[in-house]
Image 1: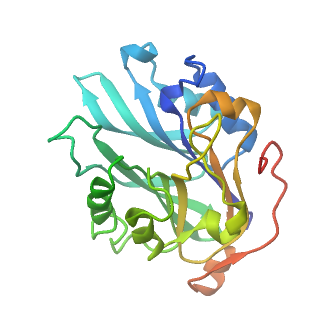
Image 2: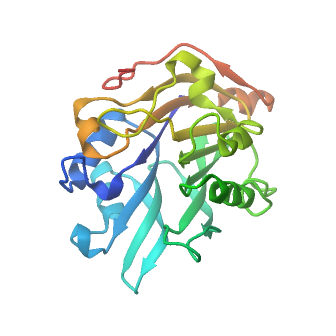
Length: 271
């Protein structure tokens, strides 16, 4: 089985740090990474501020992938904002939903998640859960309680291997990160503590708040934060790309993570 390349990217409604909106530029950044599965956050669909474009569908068409978009925010019948999973691999959507939070008490964005079961070949279905958590640690802990509970990652159908990824707004050291680290492998950290790179803000990244978490067995072939000149301007976040081989999981069913040598990553750099 080939290695599966997974990309997580907060695209900031396709608005770059130069204030220009360009789905084409975002698609270019993604395409150069050649991912098999893409998890996107902060997608606009039908919003006046982005020309009423369906950004999820436009990006999928540009990349030649299928897409499932979930709106965490709805403004009237036609304006949506949320997260998406894109892939050209066979997949089925298992769940989408809005997460609990503080939006009913203070002016913060509603948050959501979506869960897809992706057939990566060799009889292995990877459970991919994409989310974008709130900015307050107490809110994040509330949202994680839901996501780690019986309706999401604790559901009997959410069997290993599981990839839980997105913009968690939680750097290492804080309680939400520690809560996740108690049940999952931080793929960046497992690849090499000194290699773990920040993803935000895009021009001069200082915070590692975008994460890929793994539960179950996989071999880590490579982990990169994409720091090309185009990626540095296309969004206020940098994409995080990981290469995982799930073949050993099908063979043994064991629960561990192994690191092996990197595969060629083309346009990717460790910066």
